[in-house]
Image (tube, rainbow, N blue to C red):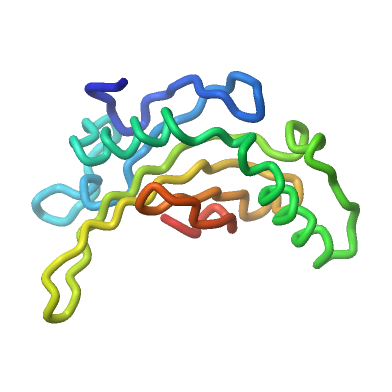
Length: 152
């Protein structure tokens, strides 16, 4: 369990049964200072971000989402009339490079505010070379798969 971590630091995780080094970065409210400007890289993750990251590292295994990731890749390939891949091809198809932690407070009209925890695997994929891949989770539930800028 991580008790302290900085945005931009790297960590080794399992991706499709292989160890890979990923950058952990904050993209939520914590990445802004009191003036609303971006903080310099290397700032500490706050408690909410650490809790979200620890849950993610403990409970999320990309191998559990092979079917969904393969379907997403094949949908992208189908749009350009290209090849079909199998679940066994994912190790060559996708390179996970980061984990984005997005803890944002959103004000709802009349209802106060809601803390909006999202966390995503980010990376490169051959089926979408310009936009990469984002495998997202919100409130500790699988959210879906889209281009890399989806939950940012």
